[in-house]
Amino acid sequence: MRQESFDFLKRLLDAPSPSGFEAPAVRVYREYIQSYADTVTIDVMGNASATLSGETSTPRIMLCGHCDEIGFMVQYIDDQGFLYFSTIGGIDLHLVPGHKVLIHTSGGAVPGIIGKKPIHLMEDEERKKVAKIVDLYIDIGAKDKKEAEETVRIGDPITVDVSLERLKNDLICARGLDDKAGAFVVAETLRLLKEEGKPFCGQVIAVATVQEEVGLRGATTSAYRHQPDVGIAVDVGFATDQPGIEKKKVGDFSLGKGPIISRGANINPVVFDLLIRSAKEGEIPYQIEAAPRSTGTDANVLQLSRGGVAAALVSVPCRYMHTPVEVVSLKDLEDSARLLAAFIRNLSAEVSFIPV
Image 1 (cartoon, rainbow, N blue to C red):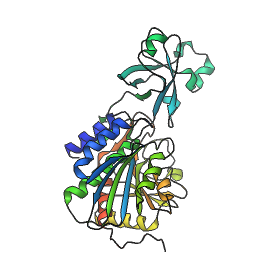
Image 2: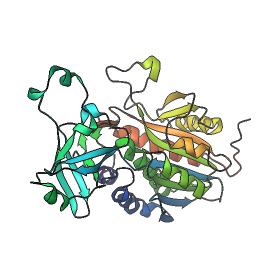
Image 3: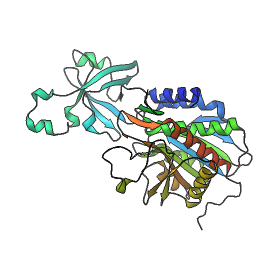
C-alpha cells in the first residue's frame, strides 16, 4: 500500500467516532478526499459526500462505507467520582473489563480504566458469569463526584484506547475497522478513478455514512438525498479462517483472498454479475457470500430507498469483529478499491439494472 493511503487509514482509525459522534473521522475523510472530488459536502446528519463526475450524467453510483464505530457513553457519576456507562452499538461484555479508555470531552480526551471487582474477591458463581454493564465503571482518578463532573459530562462518548498495529503478512490490527475499512475503500476508489484518468460514465458519490451501528441511519438519509441508480455498501465481513467458526454455517472466507461479494435477496443480480465480471477481467481475487435475506448492512436501506435502488455489498474480510483488535489485510483493502473502480468503468450510460 502506498504510504499516503496508509497514513490516511491510520488517521481515520485514530479519530474517535462512536455512533452519533463521528465528526473527528468525518473531518479526516473530507480532508483526504477533497483532492479527488469535484465537490465535498456534509449534511445535517454528518454524512460526508464526495462527488466525481464522469463523461455522462447517468448512471448515479453511490458508494458508502460507514465511519462510525462502537463505543460507550457516560451514563452516571457516583459520589466517589466513578463513571458508569452504557454501550453504543453491539459490545461483547466479555471483553470490556480492564481496558484503558478515552472519554472524549469538550476539553479533550480524558484517560480512564474500566474496573470491576478483583477476581480474588469474587464468589465462585461470580467468576463464571459475564460482568453486567451496571457493575462496570470507569476510574479517571477523580477524588469525588464534584471533581469528576468538572472533567466529564453525562453523554460524553468513550472509545477503547488502542491504535493501529501492523502484524505479519500485510495484516493490521485496530479498533474501528468496522467500518472505517469501508470508508477507506470508498475514498480510495474515488482516488483511483481520479488519478488513473480512464473514462467512465455517470456520477460517483462516495459517502462516509454515520450511525450505521445504531440503525443504518446515515445511509438511509444519504440514499434519499442522492437518489442513486446503483448503491454499493462497503463494510467488513466475517473472516472464517480462525479457530472456532463453523464454515458450514457462515461460509469460507479468508484474509488476503480478496473482497467478499454478497449474493442474495438484498443484492441486485445485474450489479452482482458485473462485479464478478469486473473482478475476473481485472484479475482481482474475490470471494462470494450467500446472503439469502437482508445483509444487516447499509445495503439494506440502499435497496429500499424511494422507488428502489440496485444494491450490492462488497465486504472486507475481518477477524474479531466488534472487538478492540479487529484484523484485516491491507491487500484486501486495496483489492476492494480496485474492484469498485473497475466496476464503475464497466458501466455504460444505457445500463439497465432491471433483473429480467
